[in-house]
Image 1 (cartoon, protein in one colour):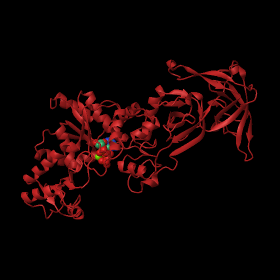
Image 2: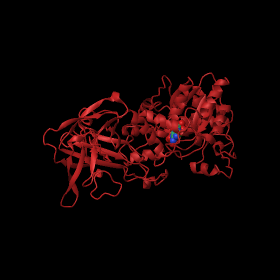
Image 3: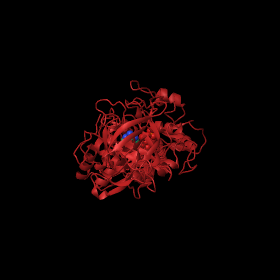
Image 4: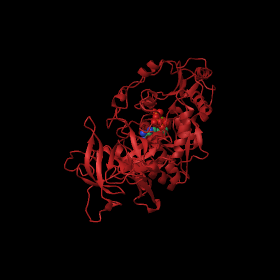
Length: 561
Ligand code: ATP
Ligand code: MG
């Protein structure tokens, strides 16, 4: 497992090396890649790895990258997904220019190629039931058996295939198969299905077709039609490569792309499977594809993750030939790295505890200066209101503190960020014995946070003015799954984290975070983490999503001083 500290060497990997060698060796004059999503769901961070690789290579080597929708299954594909995919690729900063394509653009050509295979005796119509086909396919250790329909004549095959296309038969009644080798050690070569009957209208081709090509028959040929030089895909397609090469060898294709496989991205505490993500949305386990707990790009964006953090993450994890699982902390690390540089600092109290400063005069209070970014003077500063009543974080007070607790407790003195030293005099309790208010005193000589006599305090805590702060809702997101390696299969819901969303309804934020500041830019709540306005914010009640905490959320909580 990689960690945030183990920074991968960036900029070079085995695929880029191959591209470089192909250009140097004049095997290609320009590099053409593609990102080929199936529009049956939203893109996730795994897709981002593939997008950054394909578009990144095209950019770095002065070539081009196509966006091609692999729209061969009209029953699962929707316009909503097409729109979301385009928006997400753009959000990552990539541009396909004129190079937007669809596998469905090639349906006519693929059909002609299917007839070509029939004519040369390399494809046949099979009437076996799906079950019979499955049993006859054999296993990894046993060869398959030839279909009783395998030796149909060319004329009979052509006639049946055309009638499949004319809509004469029911869905699933027949398929067109390649005639390769039922005894092949590679199951993908055991007469794979090329076309199936599916009487469903297609968003782009309407009711033109009653048959649709299989993924395997469409994918490689689409690459060949578009002149893709480097067809980059994930490892599970390694065993399909001999089949794609068989198509390229037996069809009059205009070019012969080569396929290279890399390891798909997996991350701990999450599942990157469209099927699982679709189920989460459909069954209401999350609020939608853009729920900030989702590993989708729409979810990450709503959580406040900037595209730069995703680029950084993808560089860090590199491109390898062996599957592995990346520690979720690596992504958080990249997010913190990106946001630390830009996010303005603000104060917000997530779980407020009222503090009355007994020796501070009642009234309008005073204005104090607070810097917007500690490392960037250009970000300037702002005025924050201080007064007799403030809120601090509940967890910054303990009535009977353990040894290493240096924040507020009876008799202890701490620094209020940008303000004064205060000392706790008394904890006021309700009938149930819970602390509901602290009575404190302040030292007027410590304005700005330093004592003229040089005395030190061990803790600085944040606060907001009771009068001037605004109520807010803060949503804290924890991992969607409670296990580092959740099952991606049946029953995955058992591994869902019941605490993945914590809603803090009584938070208080400084005025700069409320009025008219519905900015899409994340800010840092001092000592808490990075937060961004959720689209559900209203002028009266801002809603903030926690993008990421300041420290590893997956590590044990450390006592902060
Ligand atoms: P499925 O095929 O099961 O619907 P998919 O995740 O493969 O799901 P596609 O739309 O086919 O979805 O994916 C588009 C591209 O993204 C493919 O080229 C695929 O290799 C790549 N991709 C998908 N998931 C990952 C991942 N986890 N890591 C890296 N690349 C991925
Ligand atoms: Mg796929």
